[in-house]
Amino acid sequence: MSDEDKHDGISVFNKQANKQNINIIPLIESCAQWVDPRTFAYLPIWYPEYHRRCVQMNAEYSAAYQINGADKREANERGKTTLSKALYGKSKGEKNWTCCHIWGIDDESFVKPNSIVQDARFYTNVANMVNLPTPLKAFTDCMQDIKNLLRLCSYFTYGFKCEVPKENISQLDIFNSPLPDNYPKSWPRSLEESGSHITHSFNAAIKKQADERFKQMKKDYLLHQNNHLYPKDRVKQALDYAYKFCSDESPLKLDPFWR
Image (cartoon, rainbow, N blue to C red):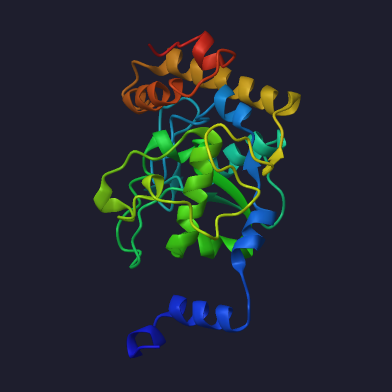
């Protein structure tokens, strides 16, 4: 190990994990909770009004929420709520599970702003999310090989890959390269393969949550579209993007109210 690697925590971790025959990927494979592709096709994006770090507005879109005299910013609240509704059919998730965004800026220094989750097309997009036990989240944030595996699985599961400038993500073209040897066996390997990894099937409770969310986003759009505090352009861009993934049964396909 070089002197540089000795000071790199990931290099030290990988060396010790190999030495002790510890493989994290089977843990991620067996623990990960994936949204049903039918749920994604029914409602791909749940909160088109929001992205990470946007100002949180009150229900009337008349003022921003305040914390200590400053506008309250979106952390990951709608991300967590979206994944809970899309997996469990309820607003609150399970204890010690964490919503992980699959696509984000690949920046080892963690200095660049994450413009991907600061985009409403990707923030509450359920194809860009996986639920993991909280201790496993760090691996999806900082280990590029694990990020690549998750991105491949998302693509084969939902037909989704994030359209971002190449300088913001790993330069390895994972979609035109052979599958990595450590790609999990239970995950799909083509767009035609369903895989056995889906943990929470689309059901009546999830559909109810999706229908309620659709009704609220439609109501807000029609009521507030002329209000300068309502993010109309953001909503239109996100829903136009979502539309191309929708099934014929999707409320967005049946009633494209924003068009």
